[in-house]
Amino acid sequence: MALYLISGLVLESEIELPELPTAPTGPPDMGWRISSEPRPSPDGGEWLYQWDSVDGTPWCSTGRVGKQWLLRYPEHGDFLISEDQREVICYPTSSTPVETLRHLYVDQVFPLQLSHSGRLVLHASSLALPANAEQGDSWNVLALAGESGAGKSTLVASLCQRGGRLITDDALLLEETAQGWLAIPHYASFRLWDDSASRLEWDTQQLPTVAHYSRKKRVGAAVGNIRMETQKLALSRIILLQPRKNVDTELAGSDAVHLEPISARDALLELTPCTYRLDASDRAHMRRELEQLGRLVTAVPSYRLTFPHDFQLLEKVQEAVLSAPAHS
Image (cartoon, helix red, strand yellow):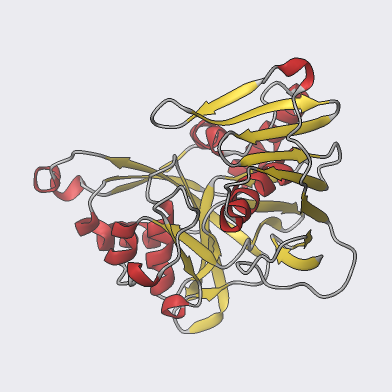
C-alpha cells in the first residue's frame, strides 16, 4: 500500500497513482483496493439509478448492498463504497487496464465519496490568479462551473498558461471557515480533447489518454510549465459558463462574449445541478447540500458568462473571466 495526497487528504492505494503526489507517513483518511472476488450484486438485484452514455447504453448504475453503495460501470468494473465513505473496494473486469481503474476512481468515485461524507464538491474547474500583477504573494481564486463540454478545462488550462495556478480541473472541494470559503487543490492534471490540447499548443501525440475507452488526453501540470497551487485559498468569485453552439460569431458582434453578475438566487439554481450526488433520495443530504450552496452564493459573488463555442474567441473569453470583480 502507498500513500498519496489528493484534495488535502491522505489516500491509501493498493496500486500506484502516478497522477498524485506521495504523502508523508501517517494514518490515511481514505483508501481503496482491488478485489479478485466476483462482482457483488445490489440488494434484491435492483439498481436504484442509472446514467446512460450518449449512445443510450448504460454508463453507470448505483445500488445498495446493505449500508454500502455499489457503483457499476458495466464494461469496466464495480466500486463498493463503505458505509462511512472511507473505504472503496474495486472489482474490475478482466479486460480493464489499470489506467482506466485509476481514472474511474480518482476522477469519479473519489469525489462521490467526498460529497456523500458531507463535504461540498462541485463539478467545477478552478485556478488562482495574482490579485496584483506586481505582487505574487496575493492570489484570487475563481471557479468555473457548467455542464459537461462547457469548456471549463480548456479555459482554466489556458489561464494557467497566462500565469495562473491550477487548483482543480474538476471536482472542486470547498471548505467553509469563519474567514470564508476555501478552495482546496485537487491534483495536478488536466483532461482535454485533442482539439483543445492542440489549440493550447501541446503535442497531442505525446500525451497519454485518460482511459482506454476515451479519446481525452491527460495533461500533467509539468507540461508547459503550468504550476499547481498547493495551499487552500479563499474563493473570490464563481463564473457559470453558458456556451452557445452554432452561433455565427460575426453576426453576434460585440455581444458575442457577455459577462453579467447574477443574484444569489439564480446562482443557487444554476449551481445545484453542478454537485456530485451519490444518493438523490437522501433528503437529509440534499437539505444539507442546499444549505451549503445557499451560504456559498451569499458569501461569494457569482457571474454568468455566455459566449459562442468558438476557439477563435478564446482570448475574449479569457479577458471576460479576468474582468469579473472579486467582490460584488
